[in-house]
Image (cartoon, rainbow, N blue to C red; front, side, top):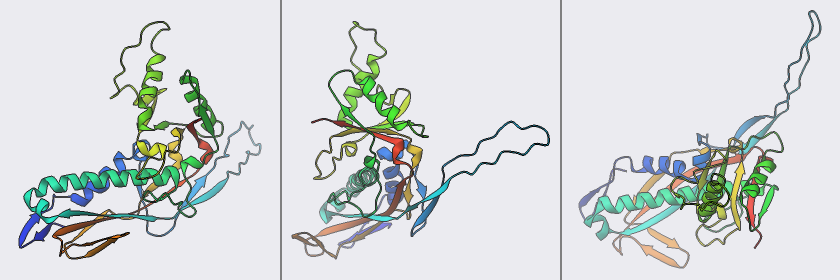
Length: 301
């Protein structure tokens, strides 16, 4: 999509518009900051899962060598489509096309980032909160830490211990963005001797690592997306290598100035109302290889 023609005038689209949306959407998501995405084929994608079990032993000359029977299982990723339509006025597009498309591009990035996070963490549709059939999500872990008043440090470490109880190696934290100040104070607390006043933490950097592990923040961690209510989850800790996710197609952006768009009780006639519609679509998929490799932190109230 290189340009849009409005009333005989050509409005240029920014170069690499769709590609930038795709790249930044995945990289700026909470999940994308903790584990990389990967290209996925269309259709169901089977991931072999090697559960370990191979060990070596000391043997004497001419003695039989020990044999291991590693456990091998598999997980299936079923791709789903995320899509949405943005409607803007033709007048805005003609008056400041670069500015308008820059705002729209960032809005698309933010929406897809939130959508990916909500799917992976909650297994639900970002728009309606409806559970996605057969979807597995991080919040399904039975490892839970109920946060209480008082020192946050041992509570954070307790979640790590739960996630590490099996064969997993927890390697990162995801926190609700509103929890950043508490995490920053807890991180600073262990560096400040008891009784010494604590300086104001630098929120830009103070909580980027927790206990030496990377930490990412977003409102979707607490289930706050669109009209969905707060889930009371304040964070997750886990082995994010157990999350396998990616995209089956590049993000596509198509446009129309003549379609009729129906949204619930609202109907938009683009040609009649001097509007332009941009449709963004992408196909993503994910699975969690081991739910016991994660723990959730949640408020008691």
